[in-house]
Amino acid sequence: MGMIIGSYITLFLVIFITYVIKKNKYDKSNYKKESGNRFFSVMMDKGKYGEYLSFNILEKINGASRILTNVYLPKGNGEATEIDLVYIHETGIYVLESKNYSGWIFGDEKGKNWMQTLKNGQKQKFYNPIWQNNTHIKYLMKALEVDESFVKSIIVFSERCTIKKMEVNSKNIKVINRYELRKTIEKLIDNSQRVFEEGKIIELYYELKSYTQVSDKVKENHIEQVKVKQNLEYNHRSSELIAKENINEKVVSEEVNEDIKVEDLEINIESEEIINTINAEEGVDSNFEIDVSSEINTSTENLKSDDELYKSLKEFRIKVSKEENLKPFMVFTNQELDLIVESKPKNDGELLKIRGFGTKKVEKYGETILKIIND
Image 1: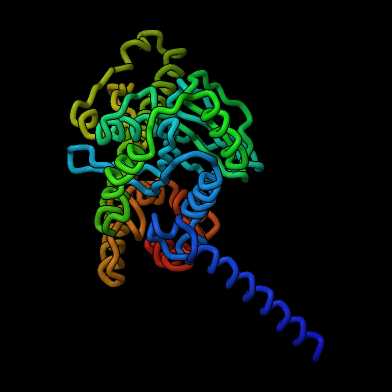
Image 2: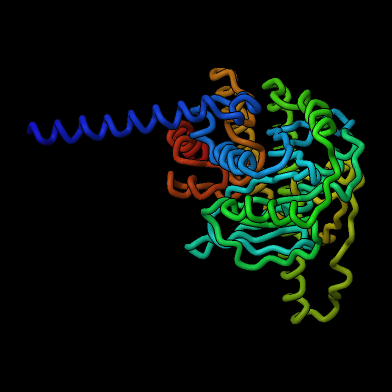
C-alpha cells in the first residue's frame, strides 16, 4: 500500500515540476507578450500551440527581425482576415499559415482543394491553404504598401502529418512540416537580398501591431463569418450532390425510356447573391455553377418530418445558448444541424461521426439531441 501511495506522489511531483518548468518558460516567452494568450489556452489548443512552437523557431534565426501573431487585417467590408504569424526579416516578410492536421497530405498549388487521408482510410478535403494565404498576403500588402516580391508564403503543417505528394512551383511559396521551418527560411534568406533596414522593420512591425491582440468581439465575429461561409459551401455541395443523384436516376431510366435526353436534365444555375456573399479565403470559391435537375422528386412526408426535426433542434440550440450565455453557433453550427437532420444518428457513436461533434459536446448535448430525433 505504501509503495502505491509513494508511486502516486512521485507521479504527481513529476507532473507538477514539468508544469512549473513549462509555465515559467511560457511566461518569459516573447510569444506570450505578442499574443496575449494565457498558458492553458495555448497548451489546450493545437492551433495556438503550433503557432507557439513556430514562433520559438523563428526567434532562433539570425538577422534583424520582428514577429507578430494573430494579425486581424480589415478587408474593407466589415470583415477581417486572420494571419497566424508574420515574420518581418531584413530579407523580406514571411507570412505563415499554420495547419495542425494528421495523416497523409496531398496537394497542388493550382488545385482548389487538398486531401487529408487518415490511417483508417478516411479522406477529407480542405481548402487550398496557399490560396488562403494569398488572400492574407493581399490585405497585408494593402496595409503595408510593400512590393509583392518581398513577401514569401509559408504553409506549415504539424509534425503529426506526412506531406505525401505536393506540387508547388512558385519560388516564394513553401509547403513544409514544422521541423523544416528553420532550415527552409534560412535557405530563403541565403537566396534573398537585404530589402529592409532595421528602422524599416520596426516601422512595419508597429504598423501591424495595432491589428493584434484584438477584442474578443472581433475574434467572435471572425469565427462567425468563417462558419457562415462554411455553411454556404456545405449547402452548395449538398445541392450539387442532390442534383447529381437525380441526374443519375434519370440516366438510368433513359435506358428504359429513350425519349429522355441527358442534356434536358441539366440546368446551369448561377446564384449572383451567393457569389457576392462567399469569399474564397475560407475555402469557398467565389464563382461556381450548380448542375440541378429540372425535376427533383422528394417525399412530402419526409420533407415535413425533416422540417419539424430541424425546427426542434434549432429551438433546443436557442434555449441552450440563452441558458449558457453562448452564441447559438457555439452550441452547434448550421452545418452540424444540417448533418444531424440528414443522417439522423441513433446513438452517441453515430453522433460522434458528425464533424464538429467531439466527446465533450456529445456528453453535454447528445442525450437531448437523440431524444429530439426519436420523438
